[in-house]
Amino acid sequence: MKAWRRLIRMTAAAAAAALVFSGCGASPGAGDIRIGVTVYDEYDTFISELMEDFMEDVAAVNAGELETPVSVVRSNAAQSQITQNEQVEQMIAKGCSVICVNLVDRTDPSMIIETAREADVPVIFFNRELVEEDLMSWNRLYYVGADAFESGRIQGRTAAAYIREHPETDRSGDGVIQYVVLEGEAGHQDSIVRSETSVNALIEEGVQIEKLESAIANWNRAQARNRMEQMIDSYGEGVELVLANNDDMALGAADAFDSREIPEEDRPAIIGIDGTKVGLEGVRNGKLIGTVYNDKEGQARAMLDLALAAATGEGMEDLPLTDGKYIRLPYSEITVDNISRFGEETP
Ligand code: GAL
Image (cartoon, rainbow, N blue to C red; front, top):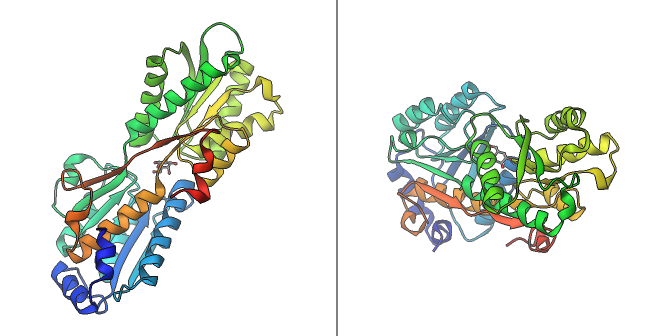
């Protein structure tokens, strides 16, 4: 049984007792489960959709029979680790029973861990994965995310299947697919792993490929458009495949071809990762040949389940934790053939 479903059956008194037991900092109101959430950048498309799902799940819990209200204290770190460290301190001062952290700098969680540990408030890191050594440094630290290797593998295989079905992708007819990679942030686990794994998957699938260039565009559509325009200037119509680490950058690449008014038949195949609303729309309208679903609904739900369990000490055993620490949701392929299963209809 899900932790929060079990909680719905708890009485307010039992929940309040569990909260006292959790030993959080300043005391929240009796029965109030207060969750702090800080994100690295609230304007990141995937993160903002993940947060929407999280808030919907919280609302669903509050609309249920749960006699213990759940409240959320939200903050945007706006790409500053120093700001985020302060936000965590404030959340603890405001009596949060548990804190969910989307780290700005995934290599620098030490202040947050120290602050939370002193106050004995559990922390759930999500989406931006800290190194294992940091995660293991205290028993009340957790991580919710996905397996970056799987996203790259699926992206490469999906692109390979497309190329097999559409031999015209090799416009030059030289038997080799000339490709470029649009990478997320330098040092982000998803950028590093996706870039490498998707290319390896193409090779394993027997596609002959040649890398023209890779460019960092920080998950951002406008930056990707700029970088792609520069590559159009360098290679003309020589680019046959664009592997983008996320949908926003894939769409930024498509924007570049639009802005240069390049006809459809001279454009490369473009593929993203995430399955955000705009990404799904891009697959539907043919701008993208596909994407890879980054299960934000599943990640949001897992964060809430884990947050409630960690805050109350109840239901931890029902959660699919690996090594008592990690919850990773699977990715899945999205193409025009199965897109009706995603978006509004997604379970
Ligand atoms: C990735 C996602 C990107 C971006 C990034 C932020 O998992 O695919 O679009 O949101 O996380 O950390």
